[in-house]
Length: 167
Ligand SMILES: Cc1cc2nc3c(=O)[nH]c(=O)nc-3n(C[C@H](O)[C@H](O)[C@H](O)COP(=O)(O)O)c2cc1C
Image 1 (cartoon, rainbow, N blue to C red):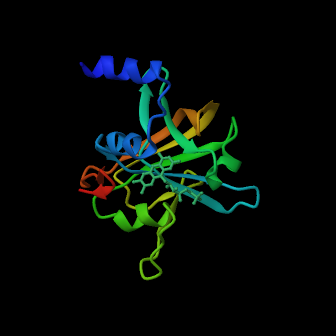
Image 2: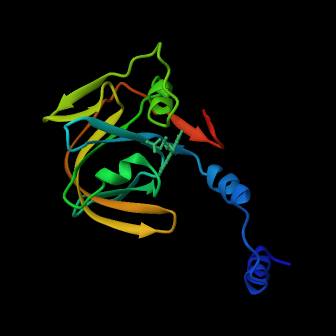
């Protein structure tokens, strides 16, 4: 049976797709790594590691990313919120781990104010954006953001992620 037919047969039998397989196949799509930053009501920085970043449109300039419904960042993810996106460089694995819930106390995280907004210091690239739509998409929400400012550090190489590991 062709893969398409297997899928169809599974759907007909209403077989539940297994989360482990879903993660395994999704993880075989190699990506870069970003850290999404924003401020909470008290002015503190909230950050989350995300590989779901997508450059959506050049005209108008739009980008997007997806946030787990249970992530702390969801509280700050409102339409009109200012959102920073830092694209991590190859030497920033510890920064990715830190904002994925695995901080290393021996490796302090350096943020920098850029146009009055907190971003990851020495990242490969960065955007300052405004969230224009927050759309529920299953167990995640999609944030569609318009780009206001951006920059790139030409000397850096990307941090890459594949099958649950950094390359
Ligand atoms: C490389 C990498 C990429 C990730 N990408 C995403 C993502 O795109 N969306 C997401 O919701 N979580 C993603 N995560 C998981 C979150 O970073 C992690 O669950 C984080 O701890 C959630 O934030 P919280 O602990 O503040 O709730 C990723 C983790 C790693 C290590």
